[in-house]
Image 1 (cartoon, rainbow, N blue to C red):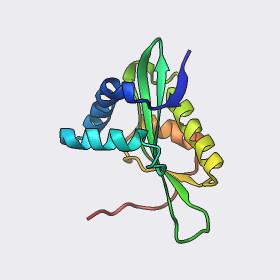
Image 2 (cartoon, rainbow, N blue to C red; image 1 turned 60 degrees about the vertical axis):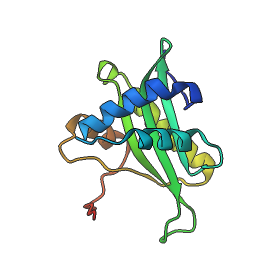
Image 3 (cartoon, rainbow, N blue to C red; image 1 turned 90 degrees about the vertical axis):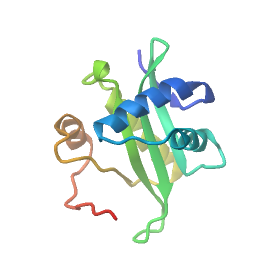
Image 4 (cartoon, one colour; image 1 turned 135 degrees about the vertical axis):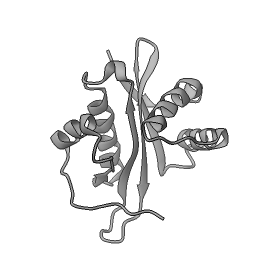
Length: 145
């Protein structure tokens, strides 16, 4: 049985292990202070625009999702950016990723920010199979400085 719930203070060690593996997939390493800063923001109610859910099964964390509410210049309501999504490889294909995304959809609806968007790499075929079933692919290409 998988439970999707908000991130708690006591989750730091398991959360950071999951996020480390997520970042490794994207060939990214971050300093320890970023882990601590990000975690503190995700669990701090005064940072209501930054949020996280975790997936828990059998007393251990098996997935995470981070999402951010922010203003948008093309519409009156804010939008929701699903920034990070990760499920442990041992549970992929069991619906954990879908449950985490659906939790963000519900949070976005509850927040009055029904537009949810995210990015992935074009070669992330496993994740894209899920994304293609629950969302609409847009033609946008990301640039970054």
